[in-house]
Length: 62
Image (tube, rainbow, N blue to C red; front, top):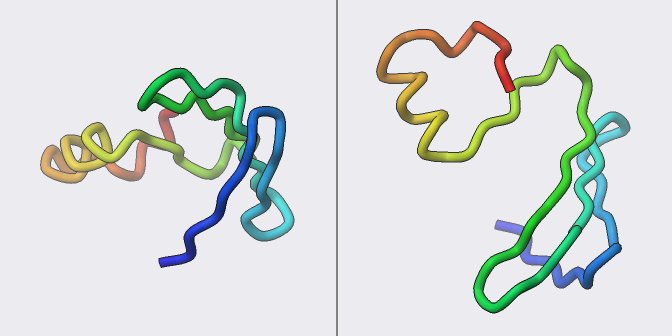
């Protein structure tokens, strides 16, 4: 696992097409923005697990 420190307004890149921005840090919560191609599914972990259990992972919903 790669561990990075970022401050509000700073970005990180995953490959050439995915950009993640730290939008807000409040207590123990971090709000992030993800810019990715529409063809790439982006889900919170708990939603991903539910979709995988239901067998609907190929739907491409965000």
